[in-house]
Amino acid sequence: MDYKVLLTSFEHTQNMHAWPRQRIIHACLRAAIVNGSLAAGTRLLASRALATDLGIARNTVLYAYDQLATEGLILATPRGTVVAPLALPKTRSSAAAPASGAIARRMQGVRALPASGAEVGAFAPGVPALAAFPVPLWRRTLERAWRGVGEHELNYADVAGELSLREEISAYLGASRAVRCDAGQVFITNGTQSSLEICAATFADAGATAWIENPGYVGALGAFRAAQLRTIGIAVDAGGIAPTAHDWQQYKPKLIYTTPSHQYPTGTVLDMPRRLALLQQAKAAGALIIEDDYDSEFRYEGPPLPAMQGLTPDAPVIYLGTFSKTMFPALRTGFMVVPANLAAPLRAVLARMAPHGRVADQLALADFMRSGQFGMHLRRMRRLYLGRRDLLLAALARHAGEAVSVHGSSAGIHLSLQFNDAALVDADVTAAALEQGIVARALSAHATGLRQHGWNGLVLGYSQVDEAAMDERVKMLVRVMRASRR
Image (cartoon, rainbow, N blue to C red; front, top):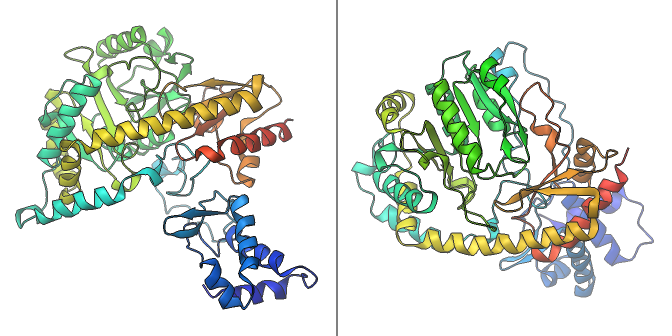
């Protein structure tokens, strides 16, 4: 980045001749950050170096940097001053739409997910505190794995994944989640979305009925619709998924997708009576339950309920897990635990779908778990998230008061707000908050069926919000809410 060119171009397009030099520098850098010319993560020149480049006093640059930091546009990091990650509204694309026949009809109704990496900061859900991940330790683990890779490991890998990693996962799940399995029932995937696509394609025929929580995870909805399944949204109340007798009779399911440990997006926890009833009814209906246990490692209140998969010896459950929340999303590693009688058929299917690889990543992850580093990392992150959750709850109590009800704060890395004010519409608040650089997803956007789900509020992720910024971010969000009342 040539800062002289940037400043000259900015001054030519603005009427700022009477402004002090320090304000011009600040306005120029601010505009470059907001319009994306200086992208998130870009390291700015040191104040002394920039002052020398522009031929100005260093204090002039320090003033501009201080103002940008106060506005949350730049951050001081060990590697220098960098542009902060911002959720800024994108400009409308003028690209022509593709031809109507370019995408298969079965895929045209699939709802788009947020662009990868587009939503970070306050209060984007689903992404862990990446700045707290021990990158140097992981790099050493990965390098050690690569040193052990030989000719054999460079070939196509086992379709189920590296045996050492599957063994570690099996042992970990047995101890932490009371999951009943051995390594032969564990299959490594490219993440939860990949696991869902495998389930939809393998365990149900086109036209079969799949249940999904409403509101629920739209990624599951997309996977089921892409496999041409008939999707039925099943209502979620304060106790989790709540199918009625009419649902069981009228919409007999083949697959049932649920997030019992921390329902997404509302955060409710499915209690033990409902878990047992769902298992019994699914077995009677000949249905498979897909239990997505995406962030159960983080629980802050009360003892964790065991996974549904381990509640009965013959539970009709496919258990899904991911390392995207416990490690980092770019690792792209998840896993499935299938009933013992489905392991061989699934292996045969996967052998035809795609060869597996990424052996070094899996060997490194197995080493990370075996050495105890994974457990230590989880404990550190649990303490971090607990502190951030407590700050968020306190700030909401101070600034939002009785305007909202909080759900799902006992676990995970997000909670949900339900509006108690009928004049608030969550989609309006979401759009207005994004203009202020705040990501707060509307609960209404998580509808998964034609039925109304009745949840009007926001999903707030707190894992990425620094403690010092929490109160101010909540105040900004509450101001947006008040300004958005209809």
